[in-house]
Length: 147
Image (cartoon, rainbow, N blue to C red; front, side, top):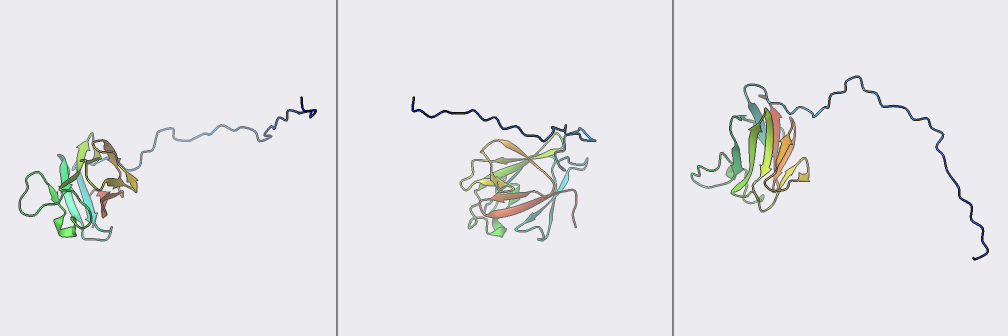
């Protein structure tokens, strides 16, 4: 056509293929299994803040309110929650099959798990040492009782 001859070049990788072998073939999900006592510790603001110890035997709603609100189990108002974008009913922590699950409750400013924004009304696994952010308020979760 245009007088130019084309040559097909095939590049081969001389590196031999080696199988990936693991001594332990079980999947590692990280520390995500609650102990029998279902206790977790949370630190609000940063991991060195005074801990709050919780027995997670039923869903706990995280949010903010002034006065009394039976729908909120963990009131974050004392942590400048309104200024940091925490909704009245922002998110929930739920024990499901010995695992802590985090759910965004259609919050205005979003719920984040280790920096990743969560889709509303879906459960996400929370592992020991994870960071939850409600708007701009950080919460650190640890399994068991921390000092």
